[in-house]
Amino acid sequence: MKITRRSFLSVSGSIGSGVALTALGIDLSALKAHAAGLSKTDRIRRAKQSTTICCYCSVGCGLICSTDMTGKIFNIEGDPDHPINEGSLCAKGAGIFGLTEVNQHRLRKVLYRAPKSDKWEEKDWEWSLNRIARLVKDTRDQDFITHNEKGELVNRVETIGHYGTSNISNEECWTLSIACRAMGLVNIDHQARV
Ligand code: SF4
Image (cartoon, rainbow, N blue to C red; front, side):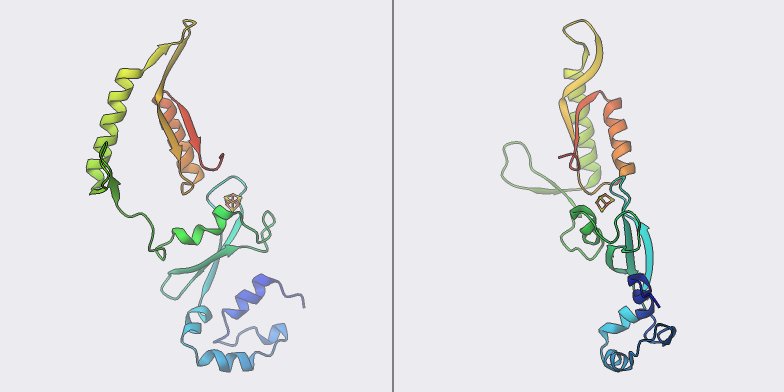
């Protein structure tokens, strides 16, 4: 019998029940005895694996998410059975697990540094969004260009730029680019292009 990595992982998830192991012709009794003494393996034994697609770009690489009995993701890796990526991931996709709650370094609050200040201040979202909206409005009112030097209608603003982070999905990128263009921005870029 051919054992794919997926079937091995699936069967490994059933070590506790003993289901299907014999179907693969593998004697895991020694491993089971060893695993029984390790509390950490409980989580792995009962893990549920779900396949999904990386949200970051149109390549559409396949992923396997492992969740424990509480539904918490504890591992994400490339799906070796997926026809597009065959288990491999680019650096962005390989780091996707770091976006889950396990990453204690995720940005959770807004930090603001006033002009000419060397100190960061913590601000709430309402203050921050109002501040951004005010600056965008003032800049557009001041710098909006309706016609270029040839007299052609351009309706653009060149003094605001938008740079997309690596942590936004295709859909978020699309929405943001439409919103930026609606405001007349022409300086729009994204981490993936760089
Ligand atoms: S961002 Fe990387 S891992 Fe994700 S779909 Fe694109 S190429 Fe694949």
